[in-house]
Structures are given as C-alpha cells and as structure tokens.
Length: 286
Image 1 (cartoon, rainbow, N blue to C red):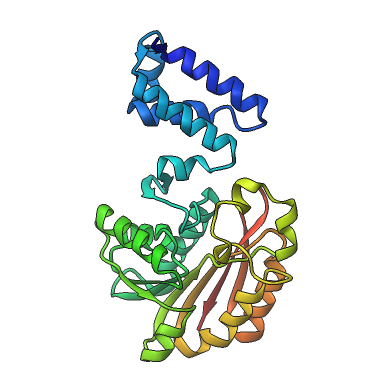
Image 2: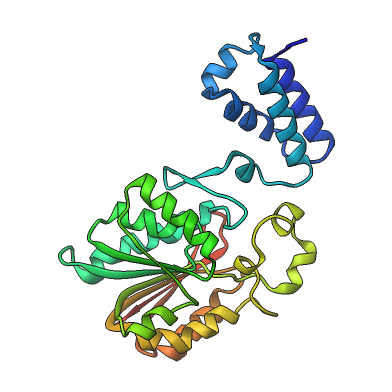
C-alpha cells in the first residue's frame, strides 16, 4: 500500500527524534529522493509516494539514524552558494570555512591591488570547496590545490570540472610539491586537520565514525600541521604574501604566535566566526 508524502515525513521526523537525531533531516532526504523543492513538497503533502521512492527514503533515514551524515547520503553540500559533491573520502564543507574564503577575498585587493595574476595554493583541498570558490569568485587567481589523498583529489577534480573552475591539482604532502619545483606563491590557504586526538572521545560519532580521520586530527594539541607549515612556508612564499588558516576554537593565539615567530614583521590577525569563536588566522607578509 502506497504512503502519502506527509505520512513518510511524519514517520521520519518522529523516528529520528526518538533516536535523538535531527528530525529535520527527514525533510531534506524526502526532497532529495522526490526531487521536489521545499514549496512543492509542502504543496503536495497529500500526494502518494511511489513505493520504490519510499524504500530508498526509508533506507536513507535508517542510515542516518546509524550515524551516516546526511551530506554523504545525498552526496552533496552547499558552500558559498554552490553545490559540491562530497563522499566519505572528503570532509563535509562547513559554514565557518565560508568565512575563511571571505577573509581571503577581502584581503587580496587591498594587499595586491586589482591587477595581475596571483599564484594561490589551497593545501589539503578535500572536496575542493576553498580552491574552487576562490577561483570562481576571483578569476585572476592561478590556483593550485594539493591533497595527500588521491581519492579526495578525484572528488575535487570532478567538482572543479562540474563548476567550471580551471585549477591545477597535485597529490602531495603540505607544501612539498612547491618546494620540490621551486614554485613561489603569493597566497597560501589551508583548512588543515586541527582537532586534538584526545577530543575524539567527546565528539559526535556522526563525525568520528564517518569523516576521514586524516583530515580531522593533528596530534596532542591539534597544532602539528601548523608547526610543519612554519618550516615550509618560508621556502615557498614570495616577499609579499598572504597566509590564511582555519583553526580550531581556542587555537587562535597559539597559531598567531607561530606565524609571528616565523614572520616577525608580518601583520597577524585572529578572526572570529559567526558564533564568536576564534576560527581564522591571517598573516599579511611584506
């Protein structure tokens, strides 16, 4: 017997609420499997749901109840107004990272003027969200994106192709590909792993059981990657350069100090996200 759309929605909401999951996910999944906009879904709640769509929807709701992030089930997440494909090989783009992108775009013209090509590297690109967004928002950027994971790079390449962003992708560890070729950069951006390993026990299993650990965790204090950057950045930056990092809440001072020690004459700023947490550190060098 077929179900009505409203019956499917009510079942998903109460099932997820009972299992202490976000009950709104039911609506997202139902819209995904029916291909309906929000307004169309609510206008047609009394329409029948095809049995095969109900089967897919029910399975997806049960997957989410077991902890699979809704973005991996749907296979996409919105970032800076564009849809990026995601899968378990890459981190799901977060709204806070949009603020990192905005902070970079804001500084580019004031630092470098509006003319000329700028060489930018996005290190640990994952889904490619940062690199692709920066290229599309500021086409004069010549963007190279790196990642240690070939699977992540395959996802990022596919996103760049679909969204029409001309970017070079290189497999490699941090800035090693640029050090090896002697390439000099105007801008280095990274949202590296920054979570202290000890935090794993208090985090949601939706994150720890499903998102890639090599993109999440970075040693005892979560600062391992930033320390490595300090050894490598002086080898690849031009005399005048911009560095932008996303950081974990509470790491602003520590990461700012690392940058000040490495670049004593730089203008280093810690910026707070929309939730009032220190989330970005920028260094304007030269």
